[in-house]
Length: 282
Image (tube, rainbow, N blue to C red; front, side, top):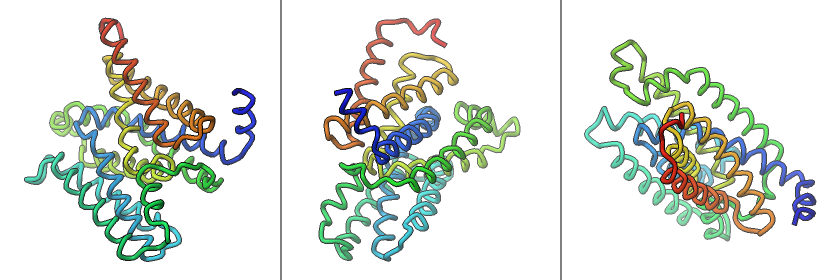
């Protein structure tokens, strides 16, 4: 098995998959803690459906670079969703559900009315659940993902204290002079970037799992925001690497395998957290 794995690791597309998987896992886990604590953990699912709808529109319009449409629409939707809970009569969870279902249905409808290939079912399945193959990843994908990831991580570290304040008590943060709207906007942009980056590897329907599970797993073991964030990042990267390696050896879909490893890790953390006392775990 090790010889087979070593042989596969010599191929560039496998190396690309490992690099992109680690970067996406790292970024999604950092923001996942904030989203879970702000009770917006389901936003990843909603935005992934928006990205699917935008991608369908880009395909119908025959855009060679679909990101020209997908990225702006996803960012705008993220901004709107993060503001709905406070500024409109439609609560956050209802808005996410409404936009999620609407975008998914619209995207699938457009792909049926204006098919761009003869294998519509295969295209939809790959977009929703991730490609069963990692042969399509290129060095360009790696470079773009690396640049975006550096920006996301740098922004998170630079505004860490402000994000912490907005996460736990946004009203108090505003009262002491923190410009919460600006930092919510930064969060929205980072979330949208991660969603778009992750679509090709894990698929639209599985992205929210990468955001939610590492954060929830960490919260079973640690009590402080810093510890939860650090462990979430480490666990998410480990699960991504493990999932990709299992996928390569067993020939299973990459996205579903990574999520399966995340679910298993959550169950392990849940058991450990139930056995060991929270006191002393900072």
